[in-house]
Image (cartoon, rainbow, N blue to C red; front, side):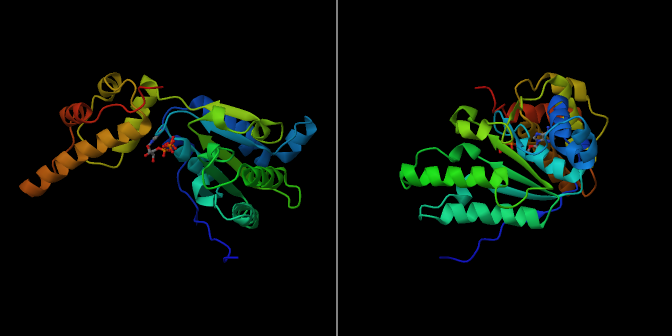
Length: 267
Ligand code: ATP
């Protein structure tokens, strides 16, 4: 056996207001996992069971990780981000041990948002793992999530996937990932908010945000961030050459949009 793995944990400053668009998704997360933590008696009074998690799905770069982090920031909780591929181990028993460790670390640090990325990797057939050992991993995950041996109080579980149809159906039972929420590419309003967010602390002229939002149909949050980064790059170079701050303009952003195309078009 190897030493217990340590998982990277942080305490994010990010808040819901930093995440552009996604109002419906934020509402779901609030009702299902934030409010039960803040108002347990109220949920009890209405006979609402708490616990379980939310499965986010949608195209890459639309802010699933970002939103999970902001969920932690909203409630002053810690945040652990786990790529399932980092946990799965071809050696018998190691994946289960890793899973147990990460849940224990979250419990010891509650309140804590435990975010599982690429959750479809669990249950997917792998050339280096026998089908039967994957079954064991699934069962371990379910037992940890159900809190069979250790209470999950104060542990908020979010997961993300680009392939929800590949997620083992046992995960979707009540008390587990019983909410499955689509994180869509941002609409025009969401895009305007995301652009505003990423330009917030940069030297910029008054920008025609609505205009840029209009010409970026199909752009993900990550794409919009890339557009702002490219425009920033132009102005940084120019400022260096001139020895003074040259502000980002609408034209810079238009040029950056031409340079960086949308990546979500296949959705
Ligand atoms: P993947 O499926 O590839 O993991 P994801 O949906 O988790 O993608 P993120 O990693 O959360 O996407 O997003 C990448 C980056 O794009 C974020 O760090 C953030 O800077 C920016 N971004 C994405 N969506 C938003 C948003 N709604 N508001 C502000 N920034 C966003």
